Image (cartoon, rainbow, N blue to C red; front, side, top):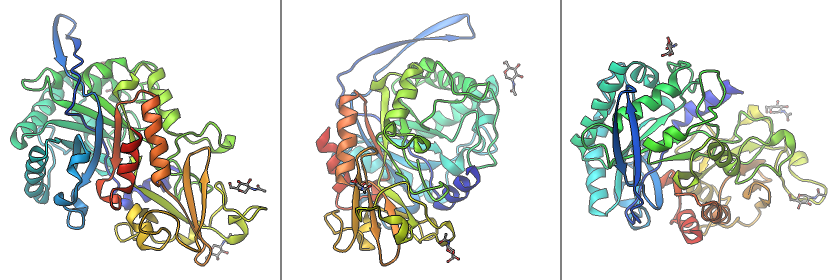
Length: 419
Ligand SMILES: *[C@@H]1O[C@H](CO)[C@@H](O)[C@H](O)[C@H]1NC(C)=O
Ligand SMILES: *[C@@H]1O[C@H](CO)[C@@H](O)[C@H](O)[C@H]1NC(C)=O
Ligand SMILES: *[C@@H]1O[C@H](CO)[C@@H](O)[C@H](O)[C@H]1NC(C)=O
């Protein structure tokens, strides 16, 4: 399964997602006492945001979805994807294109009163995080390199999208059992740099808590909450072409799913992190503007009442192609589902398309019986449900992967209205 995850996600260029911070702050101040080297102690104060409405802006889609296509007034924060770790701990990797586009991104953010965050890492750019945080010398050098980029590009913050501390992601990342502990030491070092006190420092994280030296999720991550402004839980790709059956891409809940398909959800992710001591009001929910497609034989697609439903087998040798951003992986952005005729321009299911809203995952499925293609995705209803959950669970906000995946702000407006 992991191999397929790697393969597919690699192909998507699916990278980072993080979150950001805010403008309208009620200025809750938190005192963080950081012990450095166990001797001296310094107290820093950061101002966590009070609400985060954010999305990732991907450089590699920027010719289709430009900076001026961003609905600036609807965001507190935008994350630029993505800078990478490099073989040199003192160098944050930015391509020639990034060096052109990032300053324009920051300028547009500032013009619109939106926080400009740079994401570092992602699926393909996390290779050298482990090395960068491995020793005290490297942590200092890496912190200085980060601050150099912050100053050079006048950033409001950095989003660490390490996939993943203490365990393998894409396949060739450096991994150490000390990663999570070293990451915390690094974040503390970074927070103490000149000019870093009020920096937005976030992390995009998986639904399971950072892996500890014993290979299991850490039982206490409260130390991370003292130095991170917030985390964004990447609640997507729960099911995909690597899975045994069609399932929800981004379930809100999975505790009500068949036992063998309880593969994570917004609620289980938040529960994992809060149980390990990460405060709910520093958690941003990662939400997806895309879905995964599967080839499903009609004999499997329909149940006895002739309705489509999740957890059906699919033919993995006949992966449908996705939209033009994802020609091989079967991913459809929300606009791609409209272009491909699954949905009407207003995001509702098109004529002749079967639709099921799964009440457990609170996500929709569509099925085209002419092409045998079933898609699990998010729509206005599922985004509104996630917005309501963010509100009732007291989370900090949302981070959408990705800004350019929506169509006419149908998803963005739905989650914002719920909040
Ligand atoms: C992990 O950290 C411990 C304690 O600092 C150190 O002794 C050990 O060598 C480190 N292991 C690795 C793999 O870096
Ligand atoms: C068929 O699936 C639909 C949608 O999930 C569900 O409401 C209905 O109860 C199912 N019918 C049967 C007979 O299982
Ligand atoms: C899946 O598709 C392949 C290629 O078209 C076909 O040979 C195979 O029989 C299909 N498998 C199932 C279970 O339908």
